[in-house]
Amino acid sequence: MTGVSAKDVLKQLEAKNAEALAMGGPEKLAERKAQGALNARERIERLVDPGSFIESGRHARGIRPEVEHKTPADGKIAGFARINGRDIALVSNDFTVLGASSSVVNMKKIRHVKTVACKRGIPLVLLGESSGARMPDRMGASGRAILAQDPTEYERLRESPWVSALLGSCYGSSAWYAAMSDFVVMRKGAIMAVASPNVTSIAIGKPIDPEELGGWKLLTGVSGLADMAVDTDEQALAAVKKFLSYMPAHSMERPPEQPVPAGSGEACRRMLEIVPEERNQVYDVRKVIAAVADKDSSFELKERFGKSVATVLARLEGKSVGFIANNPLFKGGALDADACQKATSFMVLCDSFNIPIVFLVDVPGFLIGVEGELRGMPGKVINWMNALSLVTVPRITIILRKSYGQAFINMGGGRNTDELACWPSADLGFMDPRASVNVLYGVKQEDDPEKFKQLVAEVERDTTPWELARLFEAQHVIDPRDTRDFLIRMLQVHRRRLKNGVGEHRLANWPTSY
Image (tube, rainbow, N blue to C red):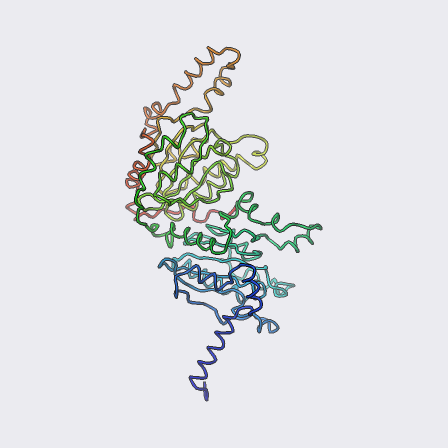
């Protein structure tokens, strides 16, 4: 610049940086602090390795002249950083700037970091809090002209993991990207919905409670769109870090390995104390997973949704593994529509990012009834089977107790697994033997106790693990206390050496939510 000294230019840069870093101004920042919420830049500082963040688009501003002066960084702080030494792309919405509303300029920023994440093979982290589309930008014909200009905006091929944290009011882009993410954590008190409570109330003509519209109980327990709810921003950011620790940076590499904590093999030796001998007595299968996996490595997804099946990321000998396990503590382990949806989405996650799957089976079948049929239960069951038939990562199945009916197939039975083992307590009937006698022979215990007992014994004789092993439909019968050692060894055998541990990703374009 003619006549302008380098010192003056650098002063101008310093002033411009200060304007952007001031965000929505001291009053709005003080208000957030009083509410106990981190601001957008503090969230980045707490999430990433110190000094690793490089901002992209710091000097972007709103495109309309009337808002240019009050839109530092245009309300969305974007860029690249590292978490535990690994590169990530990220966007942190700055609610102090026009409610982090989506505009022409800041959506360009999102598109840039998203494109880099996909092309260069690094995870994308989205720290959500937004009021939705910026008005009047999206109004009228001119507003339509700026929509859907990016044909890949809603394309998701799972080249790299996507993570969303819902940290406040999340409408518009924060909601859409959360629905497209592989992992969603939300702070209690945050809301995610298509539109705000005010807009929704006007649309439906009656008041609506924000929590009922899109609060944590709804998202984690009813719709299943959020995987986890926590109390604070800090806990949400910690969950983001932990989830990424199980994931590869991109789909063409194996997940990272971690040191094996001392004493990891001890808990499995007490397995007989965890699972009751009586198959009608309930227990929490998550304790089984914790006993089998490396010490303190379990990370459960969708704990409050579809509770009769547990989906847990963990490690075995330092390597990432996904557990799909029936949980008799809820509905006796019977699979309902939510459980089917949950298991399917978890298989998609594991297969897309080269994480072997372990099925722990104790299932009495699918939960039948009118409610399930209204939810399209047959479609949910077959959707699960569609996905399972496309999985290419190693699959190991262990039948702990019950494995009845069609659920035997869905839970990795038959040709849907690479290796199937049974505990001696495994029961391979079509249904509970007592119910079978009633259905097959029309005999009830109260009518003829002796004959009923005899028929139950006959039915049970053909449902033991020894019969399955005799037909080589089960390759192993193992001591429950050897489960951890067995899984470690079998996963070593079935590692995809020819592809360096990388699967074929036939589920990479599976719908992100359904």
